[in-house]
Length: 171
Image 1 (cartoon, rainbow, N blue to C red):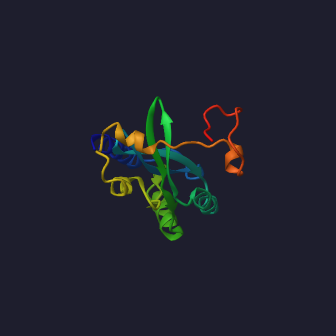
Image 2: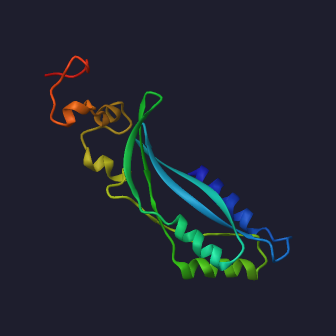
Image 3: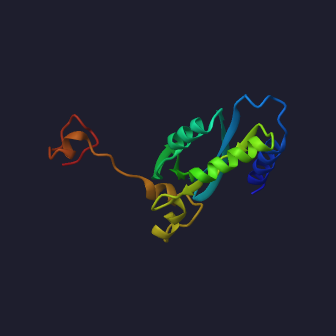
């Protein structure tokens, strides 16, 4: 929580600074990203920012179309011997709202503004994981064990039979 407050404070200070450059220079649109991860059975939120220089409204329209994305379902990866759940929220922009923020920043002489974005969570999301597996105690090693899957060799996926070529396969 303190980390999120620090990011918000830093972003607020960056946006509050006045511009010392001429109006013809690009203004920086700041995209604030929020991503959720599951580490050791706990849901953690990470917040970061990405600057994008834009000189015109046309460039801004192109940018928000490029940045818009659909949510991606959670996936689980093995990292440093531990299972970790990661997901990407979708990003949606209201063009009128984005243009209004851009125009306001220009009118007030600011050199940057925060892109207004709507975060779209995937279905299901990592926050729903404990509801899907209620018998697994949160924060325990059992979470990682519950996520383990057996990977089948390609010949079994195509209806083949196990062979000595794949030592881990069973008849």
